Image 1 (cartoon, rainbow, N blue to C red):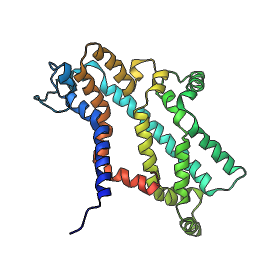
Image 2 (cartoon, helix red, strand yellow):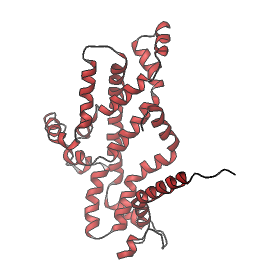
Image 3 (spheres, rainbow, N blue to C red):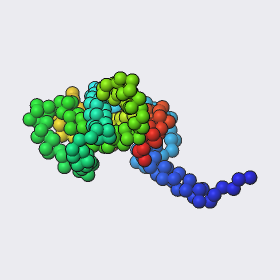
Length: 276
């Protein structure tokens, strides 16, 4: 009989405790969103469902905010940003990984300096630029500052550097030009890195709050996070915690569902791309 290592059991217990603590807000949100509205006080803080579940909170949340429009705007922002990013970070990553030009390392390190900047520092200059370009209160204005990503360039550079040059040399021998080399050889091999970056990008922009709040002033252009904040202020004044939990659940549900369905693909993408 194989003996269990006590240190492994201790590590498992510690990780289980951390997971339980980190998942407590999510558990409360799930329980509170299905709790009847006549519950209040300490009953709302209970993490164990001791009631008959109801969908009344979700119905009221859907009536209180235009969630279909908020979903549409958020999907447009996430998809549009990611579409442009995949082009810019892939080409830049290829250039830094494979091409030789004067000052390449200096330019690359200048790209990495962006990772050291706190995003709120760039809000004022970005807002001035967006206003001068006529993109204020426009979804393109929300997307524009993120069309280039220092993290994406770094990730794709590292991904391309892990691909053996033998594939490129074989394609060149077969008569492939530069575009065919990138599109048909390197990009398929770099797909795990692109998927990993796509996950980070979508999650980041789905949850983005401060920048859309600064750029968007029209209710028709609001994203989910802005709409949820507006909806929450009204529900909080009436102490409708179940409705707030239901609205929050509606915002987080697509990401939670995607992770539940494609968990293995998510983990494999990060492992193959070298993201820890």
